Length: 88
Image (cartoon, one colour):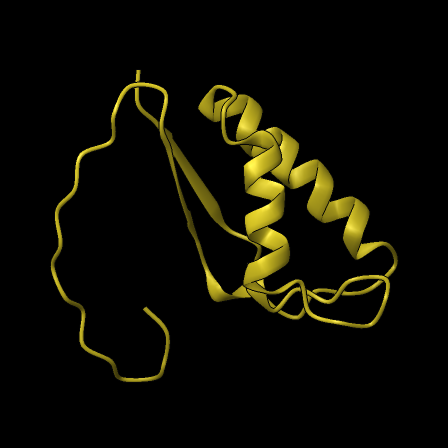
């Protein structure tokens, strides 16, 4: 899980039917966009709000399409990995 040492805590929670959970690697937050800035948590959160009520597959596809569009011609220096879990 990266090269920086950190402590992983444990936490439990319940996903209610219709809720979704998004798990991403740091490369998603740090992805350069066509405006020269990193994507960041705030913009990712807005994207997830737009797509998070869809199925897990549709949410993933919508997010990936949006990320590719936002990146434009910029080159990502890290992976763009995301996992969407949707409760039924």
